[in-house]
Amino acid sequence: MRDVAPREHDATSLTLAMRLRGGKHSSDIFQCGYIFATRNPLFVQHSRQYCLSSKLLYETQENAVIHHRELATVAWLRTGLGVAERVPRGQLLAACDRVLRVRSELRDAVGARLKEFTPEKSEEFELLIGDHRSLRRLADQTLNNENVVTPENASELLEAMRQATIAEEKKRLNKTLSGSAQSIVKHAPHKGRRHAKLDQMRSSRQLSATAR
Image (cartoon, rainbow, N blue to C red):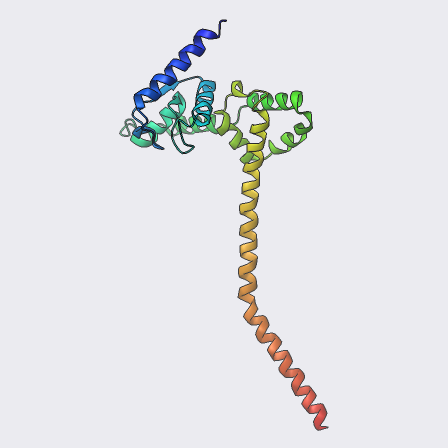
């Protein structure tokens, strides 16, 4: 029963934000009119899932509920929030490092959920966490917060990690194939001339043999 009041608060907050928008949504958060900022990543995740499943939003549109960290990042990138004041480079690098580094608690949480409910996928997860692209996708999907990992979404997170690795490998393969194709086209005229010269030499030898 203790969870009823917070859930009612979240539901009311989402409802009010959506009503205030009046159906005007955008892919630009600053064009949405109204948002509800929260520090609860689960609220952000569940509210977006609800709005998408209820056809209240399109995939490309911003959710009515946004995490404080995301809002601060977007606001800083858009306005600078006092660009005249220089941010010490060490502080900036430290902040970036905290955001980019995938927390060990997050890896452990996903691994534990998979091992508990789908143990056959644990080995694949252990392989994927060795790839920085899949780890980056995991952090993006969870906002680097292990508390959002559940038995229901652990497999979805694993699939997102897999797709991140697959997409990068496809890009690398296409680049390799493109380079090989260009190399073949580049050397094709030389091979053609070489074959023509060999044919000419064979014809000359045949004529010489006939004349003898």
